[in-house]
Image 1 (cartoon, rainbow, N blue to C red):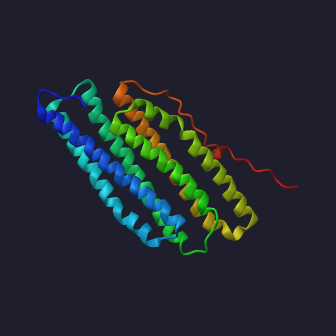
Image 2: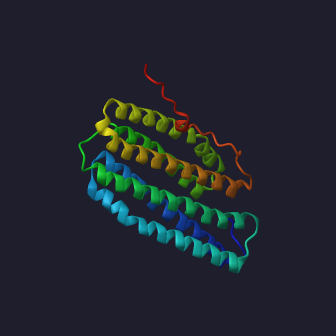
Image 3: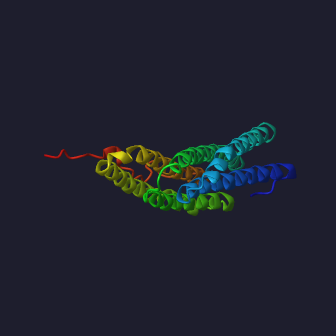
Length: 236
């Protein structure tokens, strides 16, 4: 981060970046705990995630307040302005990841009342991939690393492919045994929430890339979610 003639300006920018890093760490922990609550059937951990969402929201508000104060008092230009706006945008994406983690945790509580199902392990693998992407993009933000951010952006399709595979597996499971429809519906929503968390990590990657370079990544993101195109053949 560039030093400024007015040291207080540098301190404010650093404090803003530190708040984003803190929020990112909390959102990452929330998502990890929500996914772990499914894999380990840990209702207590799931309830902790639901209760912890308020802190994520508070940090977003804190970041917005810091950024608005900086904009009003310092009127940043060029790179400093991108830094400030990137903090606001990243905080918004992290808040949505926190909401998704809470949604996953709520469904985990319901799932844990039912007999275990092997497909929860597939969810855990997909969740691990998403968490890996989130960690990488948070590191890219802290390191101001445009190349690392672009790498995260390009890997978004991997999570989509895992979601596509799980989506079809769950549908097959439901068709083979209609008694599992309610349970599998919860798993479908959880899988979609994990996939959406990956999308928000990719959004942060775009923000980081612009913050560092002043340029935008290509408009067409490499997506691979084909679930909306799923077709079923009628049996004779």
